[in-house]
Image (tube, rainbow, N blue to C red):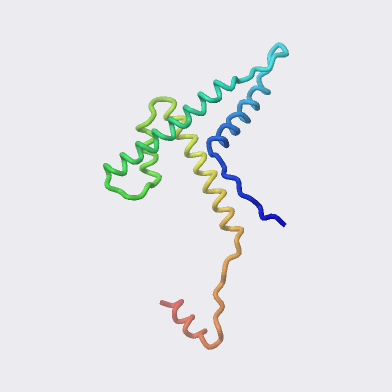
Length: 138
């Protein structure tokens, strides 16, 4: 029996596939005069480059915020500030709202996965019950 070979996953390819799925969904929704509106591959590539640029800009601004504040760890506050510095106007507002919605969805998903795991309960032997009771009173 052959061992399974792992294939390296190209994150750029995943983003491209995701964008194509979104565009296909949108093109199917927008039909007029028996013509389907489609998106060219060049437009998809440009969209992908815009997303990459936005991510790079936010990452760079986050590094600058951390350097300025003297913090060593990326936290939610520094990423929010970096996003606000990277974009302005209605685009910034839309990005912040989408980011907050994504964060809420992520927290719900992680909370659901944590609650579905069985909780380990420590067993107390009869000899140690008094010690455990005393520890609980402190």
